[in-house]
Image 1 (tube, helix red, strand yellow):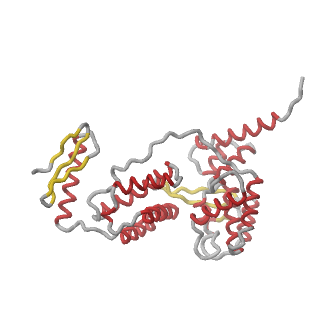
Image 2 (image 1 turned 30 degrees about the vertical axis):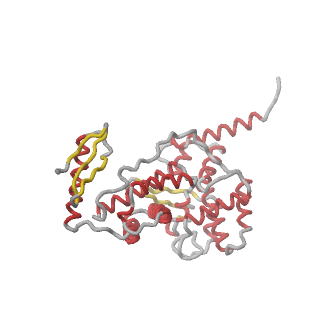
Image 3 (image 1 turned 45 degrees about the horizontal axis):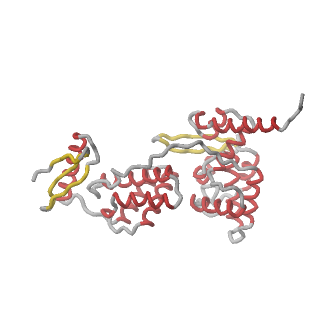
Length: 345
């Protein structure tokens, strides 16, 4: 039987024979030309497998190889994300060989993460990592085809933006809760305190704070420089250091290349995130996550009267479209202040 495509309902299917057995697989498309292309790719990969160019790969070895590629070719923050997502995936499934990663496992991963309370937007970003990883496996001739190709991301409507901004009193409660973590070494408690204060005073993301090196500082002009790669382009943002941040830097002991590292290696993102959530529970404030410190920075600037362009520049937004909410909060703050007055006619 010759390889062919056929239609079942509105969807095209692939049909071919391998090792004397007939196989069928959905092309997941209503376009005939696309289905023919998929069939061509399928036959090409089967031919490579037949001549020994496509061999099964130990899953752990592949992950190790991919992370080496990620570390070499991606930014530090992107590499950290790859590590975290792949660790989550491998912890959920016992996989020996790469060929055991299937579309159904990826779909199950979505379901499990959703059940763990992870947002759909976060799961979609994790799927992007997994899909890219599997595409590399195909490129490196470890897989015939990517099981992630037909895994769809969640579709959801973005609801009204909710900004969680912490008050000065809530920040104080968090820091007091940190002081009670006496099982942590004093140096670690101080570093965690400095990380929180640095974030809320600069609007920097956690990944940016953790990756700041001594060489990124311009103490003469009191500026910290952050570097991120987005869309393959290096983006540099310069943020002024206020008195609090300046004092943090000048009193920090230089141990390694990273500022916030009580040891020679930087603190991991997961450690800070989990510690922060623990402090939130311990201090009994309204639930918040570490990224809310960035919102707090911007919201307080808006309340102080800073314009959208200034806030956008400090946050590293390419336009003011993302920052209008903070100046809106500023106007609401002014309105509430005026509403407290009640001079009658």
